[in-house]
Image (cartoon, rainbow, N blue to C red; front, side, top):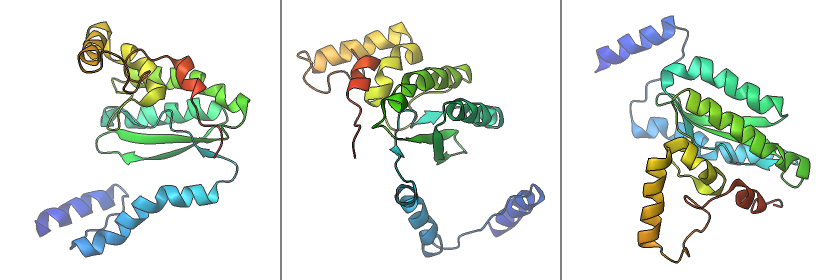
Length: 189
């Protein structure tokens, strides 16, 4: 294993990547703390804006990342939105969380346009709009586009079976609309 790690480090160095091998769980603990606290650090440094996770959980094939990520940033930045990015590059799963002031109507109006363009881009690259966290209120209205009518009908059928009165999470997963989601955005801290 040590020889394989040395060979990997050598390959990474020749590609100008810096690597560090953790020899124990304790050695790596500070890095896990940094990861867990990164959003708290961000919240403490960004003034008058908050995380608006409307394109929060995306995934595309990792081989497409060099082309996909710049295009994704171009879309978001064209609307004057500052993005934060965290995730799992090895699997192509990212949490792109725009920072915006949702108390301002002009900022909220950007969401449907940005969302439509980003979802189009994700689907163009053969990705998914919900990689590991579920659909939520804001992305539910795009599930038909993501999965197609046959799969969406199955979602509806499961909902009918387990929730015939539509009392559990109405407006999520099935029967969702972007208008409903936009009317339920939290605009104050």
